[in-house]
Image 1 (cartoon, rainbow, N blue to C red):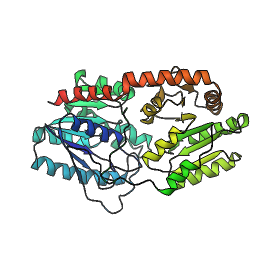
Image 2 (cartoon, rainbow, N blue to C red):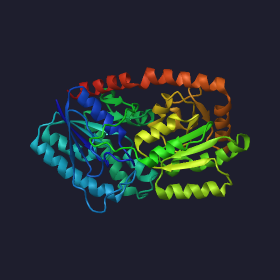
Image 3 (spheres, rainbow, N blue to C red):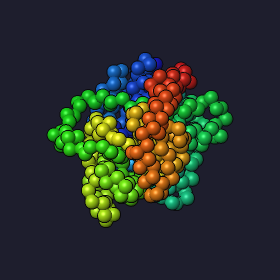
Image 4 (cartoon, rainbow, N blue to C red):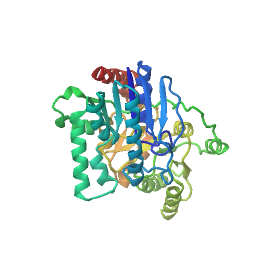
Length: 390
């Protein structure tokens, strides 16, 4: 079989890195499919045997593509569409695996070129228009709703990444067998064609870490992640445990500067460290040094990718009790807390001090991960997807 994967992403970059695209493509190739992967010009090349990486040109003023809808993405997606047409004209693909909005134009190419279509939904695009405050105008939202609905109906298979999206898609498909839920639940190191060596600065961060108890947050610094909430809660933690430290991994320089000022305004005298963006390997090494991991997210419905890695880490996790988390997490496998300053502070303190519960939740978390989300489970679902497009 031969497949074209169309990925509207800056592939592969620290910001907005499409892990789902990487692992879908990796496992597809491992299962014997010859793959062409078409993506944006920005990013580092990955090394996946059996995969040919094809990039559209790097365009002026379109670097640093933000997460979510944007004018930059619109311009890049138009070029991506032209390149897709060129590829399907020159090569015969058994199926096209279109991620996110690229499925909207691939849906119209499907009957012209006779390929089968996989629509990989990382989110609902009409919802993204409002969630990221791209527009509140009703007309473009209606257009995207119509495109999404017709694309789901036209696709040979629809893939969703979390139960919330699965529940959204299920009633919109006449044939439920065409839908498959494949969580972004594996997290092996990404194989870059030209790996970047760890910088002395990264080694310095690891060497300068304080001792336990160390609470680590790793991820983006977007408002929905709850960094403000985490900092306020950690001020309370320090009142009871002045030996505790908070490490915040990620964030743009501007975001880090903003939150440093916020830490100062909260009156926290030390105890909070920032790394800014670091390579994936460094972020994982930092997380492994944690006494407690945390996901303080306050908004959203999609399950964060990092939750699966946190479950498998053997380190207790404190997460807010919102649907984004509770689709996967429960009180048996982590410290679930209300998304308030008091709730998060109490959960962090309990995770630091209650050794019996720490051991119980981490043991059950490991069992849950290996039973439902580890590589064997992921590969089984990918085999099911390939069976739909053979």
